[in-house]
Image (cartoon, rainbow over all chains, first blue to last red; front, side):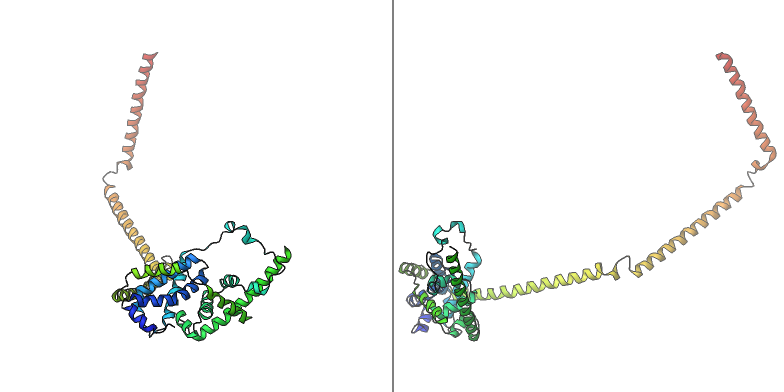
Length: 190
Length: 161
């Protein structure tokens, strides 16, 4: 949490651009990461992040600090933006447009756990999780939000957040193991 | 296993937006005007009304559909109210038929009584057809007519031949 956050929020609510800029610089990387992990595209992540902060600036007068933390309010806006994004755009990947290299089996003896645990692999495997599981993992491990802050952002109890986190980790573990197994099978067949 | 996963997840913290994007986005945002409290309040009220309005519309629709179905069920589809099976309608129809038969019978008796009366009245005044003398006279007249016809035919034959 930003020091003197409440003061900046109050000032921003009165139209102070400098105060809003402070909040913006503090929260922008977090919100950008949250969106980037969910959409996996730099340009789309930038567009959506811009929309989130535009909505925040325009609607900051409606924020009441007593209800929940500012970070939770921001994540709530970001989450809604991502939901709207997936609702309005149908994401289809055309295999014929993929480059040949993208479909090649990696030339290596075996696909080990370290490779399966690479940032890119984990990011792509996270797509298989439920949206709320993704949200919890990102907020808890990328942004180090407390279960209470995550709960406020997702409109759930902190107990429910802990349960979602536990299930998400287990599912991700299973997906990584499956990924290691299937990649090793492909290498053997090749 | 969860430890390496969390470590990998924490490596995602390395993702950072570009400086160029940060500055461009901030300047665009700060150029935009903030919405007034009244506008935001109106927006919230509109949202609340939108939701409650949708609920009201849905319940009205359900009420109309269920009400309509029950009316159809009672008035149209119910076997108790079908015209062919409605006992009160059938009774009415039967009594109407009975009444019509009785009325036509009365009319027939009235007509036949009247005709018989007229026939009986006229019978004594024209009783020539029952008189044997009159009958013979009529027969003779017919014979005369035939003989006249024969003579005309003979004359015509002579003229032709």
